[in-house]
Length: 209
Image 1 (tube, rainbow, N blue to C red):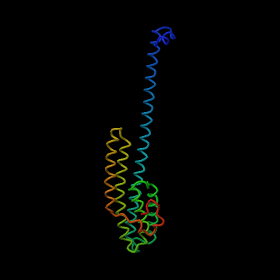
Image 2: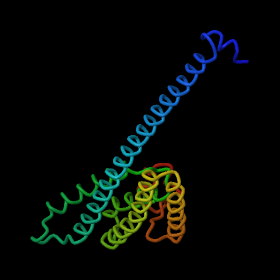
Image 3: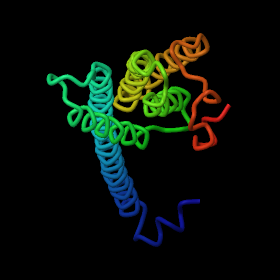
Image 4: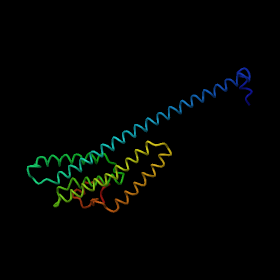
């Protein structure tokens, strides 16, 4: 089968040399391509992981600020230590931050949807008769559910940064946290009922129940 090939290149010795050289060149090129693809994939994963960590840190800061402002607003009684102007300023800032956090979340995720629902409830606490008690409960609920979200996201960062074997192990860990959260959410744990909110008609479709 190889005789025509050998004859074309001046005999078997010359053809064999060319063949070996070709195989070696293919090996070098294949190795270079594999190295490039691995390097490119590593750079991509590192970029995604870095951006996710930035997002998680920003989300944590924004949620912490919402909770802090809610507890500050709850203490308002009109005295000189916390004047009405400062109260209104804090309330507006809390609403802006609540809207910012809502835009940072993924409505297709259960924990994200629950946090969005809590944020809607927080924004209408001022219309409740016992608004201080309502605000206190919603601020606590926000903190609890946000802890689950941040724990999940940290596991996702670890999944993205690991080798294939490590990814498999951390995916199992991530799924376990998701399952535990679903059990936590089914028990209520401070979640408001969407149908009881004054703004129910204005809620996104995915929050109405």
